[in-house]
Length: 201
Length: 257
Image (cartoon, rainbow over all chains, first blue to last red):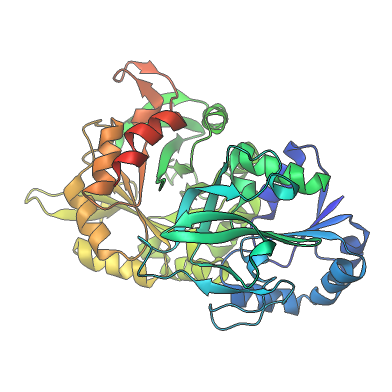
């Protein structure tokens, strides 16, 4: 069972739909007890970083997530702002993040991109084809909506990059903690593949 | 290679998928659930669903139909039509819709638009502007399915909707609607130059070459079409179609420079 963390943000139904499509079981969970029972966790997020952090804090879900991720080493997948929150901080409103990965979230260099937000389907290149990258030898096409991106201090935590004006990290892994900048729940068979990969890790 | 979004528009009139011509004469083109399944199989970039049912017949979005449509699709979905309350907008998002497209409500309920942008982020809010040339050749923004003028010039309205916090502008030319005669590139150019958010060109597309022109010349960020994706070979044969990735790559993406 996968718990999709419900803190009042994001298109949770779409995530549940695609997990069902690939044969998985999920539950939309705002109750810490349900998150504790789940084998895996998905942390969604859309909109602004500060608003998402505020909601997650107000719902008092950070302690249970910390315990499940670091104490019980459960695999967790952050989506879009859900993944950005796993970094130390964001330039968006100068908010602090969860600090689970050694990275920060920075704004796209406006001088180098055609327009913001980056709201397009973009090719994602995985560095190797294990973990979340399994089956993406020919690349993958994913739907992105964001104006901020991850900036990692250590390249080895970066699993894939995409290009918008310049190359940026869009998939990361630190042990049992995974994050993607794009919306796999809205990315057809490429997204299905990614969820299959996460569910079989 | 930069991709741009190529977006089919499904118009719904009393639960039926239709294509209109200059916002009138709706032609039945199929069951919307079936249409969405075909577009999903064709892996389209995104879908815009517009419910144009007369508001005398329908007061709020058809949530049942929308939820069914959303559960069938694994691409971004935008929905517009009969959204006048924040509770309706949020219910749509809970059904699996990413973006709410506002037209009449931009002017009748601007507070709802602003509130949705604040709560869910700009990316979830589209301003849908229906534009028609008047007798003097000036562009006029219309609401209520093209029936009523807003009474301000185009530039002032674009500024006004951007100030509401919309994340995209869906720009539909009433004159080109269903005409399969190419986009109104002048109109698209005027709005795209003024807008700091993506502009989706709609109305008139017939060929991929029209997409290239809308993006390269008129500076649209994305392109949308209805009739082109529902008819094959003029208006006679209904056949849901969408270019494959190879065609889009060779004829569109690589021509954007």
